[in-house]
Image (tube, rainbow, N blue to C red; front, side, top):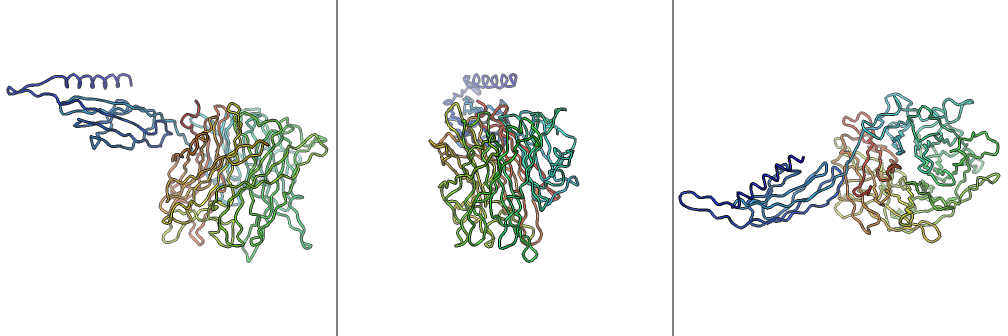
Length: 625
């Protein structure tokens, strides 16, 4: 590179010398014209790889203008007097613009762009045979980054990968989700095949331990299962799991008019807090109507788990050890759908290594869907649930009923809400390319907020921050598809009493063509926020993108970056032509440098054979400064 630049500078010097000389022929002489001037700028000056930059120039007295990138000729530009061009640098680049006058004089100007890498590799694909799954198209990729590995969960299995190239898997093949419980004696109710779908893998950043959490699906008794690692290194020969479970059946059983029903636990979400691990899940009333299964969200169950004793590895059978406390949260059902419109709570989950202030309550957040009683399609609030810390020293300990706060937010239309006018939970309006004359739809999951509800304590700047996102209709203009979706995000900061209050929010929708859905949000140590999501349209296969901006800059614009242009699509050949896709993805921040985002989402390879997952990691401009 030094030799290349020296050669380039030598060339410029040679041109300058020539420009200062005169030549004669036939007894005449040619005088040099006025020297050219040139002005060069670039925007932005810092990007993530695959993001474009715009080079803009102005010149006078120039006959030609040429752009050089790191000393190598890139392209001649037109018009000479001024213009702009879009470039896609893949690494740090010095751009030089050389303007040459009619008399061969040259003038140059230089700018630099810094490029942070965007790295991706394939995670687990759809299993050919191992472990099975209740619904092969309901992918639900989830993952977390730890100090030494990234761990991914999909359906009924998990795998961990090295954080350095070539991102080697820790185990020779994926582990079944019941692995931590499979060898216990007596047999555990959490052993395979009890857990199917909706598991969570996470990294307790304060304790530097791995946690697997899931609910069982075996009727008529349901359990919640937690396994905590004894190390942060999943490749360690001494790796062991401390395993626990608690029965949920008693909280899910109701008797009405002499008929006893056991609701099904669904869509559990999990968060690490200082006093406890917390989980929340929906209570689903499953009914078969005219041979068709109907799922109605009729309630919410919240649970707390004794984090201190689990991290210590105390056996569940220890006298006086209470591993789990749960409470059914009283809710009101929509009179038309008989469903709970504020369903799918997400617990706050700590990012970074700074703990919340001592005694800080745990908070959970949920959407507040519009009531379909009057065909309403918009809402202007979300729900915040305040859980006081559990006193695990009490006998017995108790998880007290939370306090509900309604947070006013700018009006939104939940993504695909009432696309099926008979059901507020069928949200399949995301367009894919059609199959012949048949449209193809994917599920936006717009009837709920999306994990994670990420918490961060910025101790050096003196504030705390919570962030969350969800899919909404964009309503950009009258010419777009009326169902087009984008990403609404929120940042909350605690008020003087410690309760999160809305601080700012925004919409991610850079165009009026693509549907953006299935978001997940986090922020790094410098308040750089990233939201990963899926992207699709009637002419674009589902791909993976993310957008970023800084939460400390008021009204900061968001920048979109493509991770993967979709190579294929999920096809549903028969009516209603609606595919499952997933119901969540996840983005977390590396606890080592506290600025590298790790993100996992699904995609569909070409040929419509089966789904696959993509794991990506990246830093944002200025993230590690």
